[in-house]
Image: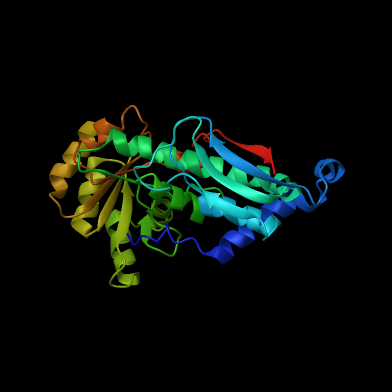
Length: 292
């Protein structure tokens, strides 16, 4: 599958996301800050980790503060990247300038940073669980609407790999596509054939299968990749034996931190876990203000 360069976050895109979130929060009508903090008062805010985890989202947090007030000075204090870990109490970044602007952007910046760091942390834990098996972790399209670029970026920060970024990136034949075909008297082999005929030469065709028999049928039809949906480890091993390297195998469905290694040891090439983007717990971060 083609992978988008999720580590390339375009400043204009970050700016739009920041502005929309700030508008939602009515940051420029912060009645509390307007009542208590004069525009001329300066200060410094330090973002601090409250829990152990993997940091992701510094460019987004910076974009938020710059959107509130371009005069704010932003300085990262911790590393963001695969293998880097935060410890409780560690300073993550600091922002300095008009204190009212810092307070207006505080919650939006922390929301982004905590969520993305949570995604990176959940990803890293699964990557560590399957280390040494030869299997890799993929994400899915189960992302927060509007935040896919950021969440897939965080997956990469955590050591995972991006699957399809959008419906246009690759062919993935799923159960409902097959249901539509069966209504016309067609099956798995027909699905693979039609997809390969329609796809550009460089585009890979992946199909979801739920049994060893379906997997063998898809392999015989020439599918490039199989998505093994909710199969047992024993069934996965049989598919691995049948595939003999002829297709890339991805296991999905019901994979957790507890069973990920057992699945990876079946010999599949990838596991995919939607929970790393749609259900990752936020990493606890806070902003502490120091008067300038």
